Amino acid sequence: MRQGGSGAGQEFSGYTAVAVFLHWLMVALLTAQYALGWTMPEIHRGTQPETLINLHLSVGALILFVLLCRLLWRLTHPAPPPPAGLPGWQNLISALVHWLLYALLVIVPVLGWMNASARGWTVTLFSAVPLPSLVADGSPLGRSSGDVHVALSYVLLAAAGLHVVAALYHRFLLRDDVMRRMLPGK
Image 1: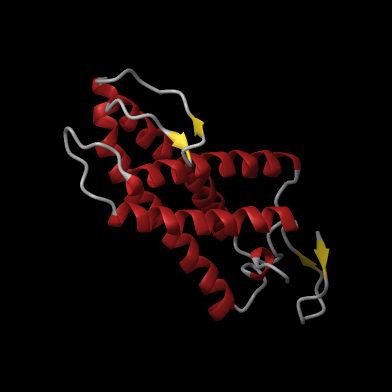
Image 2: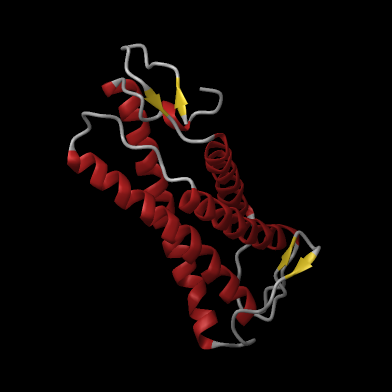
């Protein structure tokens, strides 16, 4: 989507309104998910899901759904080209971090869902839509997926943090349009 100039007389190329909406919706969901993850009770053998755990599972399922929508949108509406003049290494690192984020946004919720399935818990989307079990109750693979889920959630947090730091670097140090391309109402 072409927008007005960047102030330097250059043409500004930003993401579509749908892409911007899905990006910020994902930010809100991830913020809620980490808050839930840090405030819900410890999960041990025999723990039964209660409100916070069920909400955490629902938000995880919603993250997967929004990510699927986002990837479908991205396939049919490619990202705008990077601003002219960015060094190749920045473009490469940006692409790698974005694809790492996409991969983790699939892997982390699926591992949590597998762990819930192995515990015999029914994962539902906000108590309305039951989702199928990904592994059998008691599955060793499902049980071990919980620890990997937690470890990769910190990798996801670090990758998201790197993404934010890079956006702020472009906004406040380089003063270019990289961050502005994803801001609502630009």
